Each structure stands twice: as structure tokens, then as C-alpha cells.
Length: 250
Ligand code: PGA
Image (cartoon, rainbow, N blue to C red; front, side, top):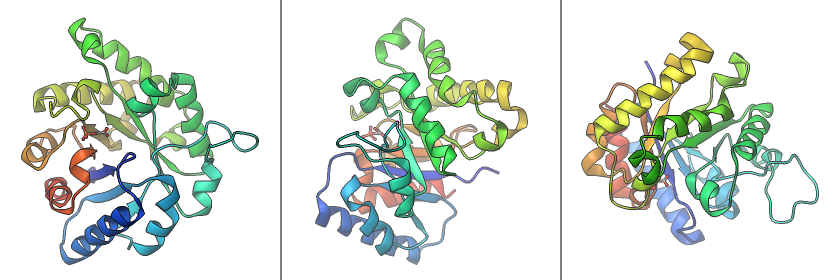
């Protein structure tokens, strides 16, 4: 049985007080309710340490990004070992906003993934096609290509990797992949992982991201290969994110 994940990607949306209030209210609600979902929040870099210390074990605090080099003269970058030194375990890599706005290549994302695994941290590796790829029926090829970032690992390094399928056309647009479209791609991703890692890929959590909301989370997370969600907009308030966490707890 794969334990489902509800992960909130707060992007560059909240200041310190807003982040702290949201983290504390989620933490309190989580400790008042029972539920099996693993819950992750990804606030901005400057707040990670404090939020990680203020919240309980029910809430994992993740980074949204990391550097693709170990250390040195890289102004403005934050290394994997820096994140590790403040107790962070999960890092989102290859989000489509990083790929498209900041020009991160598959090689860069592979490097980040490897650096994280070297430190026994857990990468949440995002993949997903643009609408033009889907229209040209190239979405499977594109996602297969992006998966190269996790296909050259030893099985013992691969085993904790989390994948997030986020079709770019569904991110922040209010448009969601249908549960059938999500399931179809998640099954494809799992079969690609299986061709390299065999049965191990049965345990890989594959999250769906792209306009997940309280109203669609149940149906999406109900599909066989959808193991929870990576949630942007709807993770920014307690009520909506708690409803999504409930959907991941079923
Ligand atoms: P969204 O963002 O839920 O606002 O579409 C998802 C993401 O970018 O991870």
C-alpha cells in the first residue's frame, strides 16, 4: 500500500507572518484529526528553519528548490547540505516554473536529484507536458524524456524518490487534467519506472499537480496510480488544504 501525500507548494506567495500562521493552523488541525496522509508544505527559503522547528512531525517542511552544485561561489543559491543542516528532508526539483521561467534543463534537474540522494534526502521530481505537446500527441515522449533524471540511479537510491506529474496547462489555470487523463499518465510513468526498477516502482508515490482543489481531489486521488497531490493555490488556506488532505487520507 502506498501512503498518499498531500504536498503544498506555496511558491512565492506568502510573507513570514502569513506562512507562520498557515503552518501553525495546519499543524494544529492535523493534530486534532486522524488520517493516514503524509503532509508536506513547501514555504520559501527564509522561513524553512523556523517553520520546521515550530511544527510537529505531522507536517514535513520541504524546500521548493536547491542548487545544482555542492558549495562555493554561486551567489543567491542554496545548497542541499545547507537544507540538510536545518533538518529539511524533501526538496521539489524540476517544477515547470523552474524549467520554463529559469531555463533549467533535464541535466540540471538530474544533478539536483543526485545531490539530494547523495545526502539521503528525498527529491520530489516534477514532470509534465505543455498543451502544445499534448495537442501534437507528444506528451508521453516528453514525460519519458524528463524521467531520465531518475532512471540512472541504483535501486537503493531510487526507492525514496517521489514523482509529481504536473501538466503545465493545468498549473494555476483552474483547468485540471481529468481523472482519466491523470491516471493514464500516472500508469505510463509507473510502467516506465518499472522497466528500470521492476517491482520497486510499485512503491513509488506519483503525485498529481495542476489545479487540485477540494472539489476534484477525491476523484483524482481515487485513481489507482494517483498517490496524492502537489498543490499550489489551494494549499494557501487551511480549509481548502485540509479538505485535500482528507481526500488523500482515504
Ligand atoms: P496549482 O499549482 O495547484 O496552483 O495549479 C500546482 C503546482 O504548481 O505545483
